Image (cartoon, rainbow, N blue to C red; front, side, top):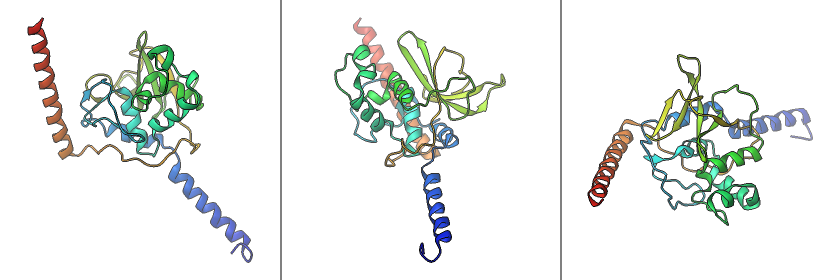
Length: 239
């Protein structure tokens, strides 16, 4: 084809390349959609250290921390922060706060990507930082809740009555969508780019918010809360 019809061949090749780019291009709209799908599915906040598979590892979807909202939403687009952060920390360990903040002397695939300060450093290393205060749907924002305690969330495509964009995050009671953009000091503002370099093999995404899965996870959450209350009551008696 390229010898007899060079123009046709060029158009065919360009069409294939554009199709591949669209398939791998990052979509902020989809990030918002996939983060919102966690509402009613992730019902608990659980910061406990957990051993998880690598790559594509995760704790049970019914629970998690603020970073898990971002991690799970990005995996629907084939972006595995667990793998990406681990690879970058392995190559640039001195640029991350693992040693200074957590006294870690080597990377840990179970927890590194689930820490806000590590994600901040990774996004900065990738050139994703945004200097202005124009928050667009799909932007990733970090806050300083108090000194040494970070938080992260995703800017929604919905706005509050005040005109401020809502944020999809987990700050203690599972994944929520609410007005909190300026509730705490903003410490970072990031916008992923369509470079294609951040994409890795697609991992199995979190389940969608179906009525059946929601009912099952609600029961799990109720059972977890009951166990927590029983444990807390036992501890008070011991005191």
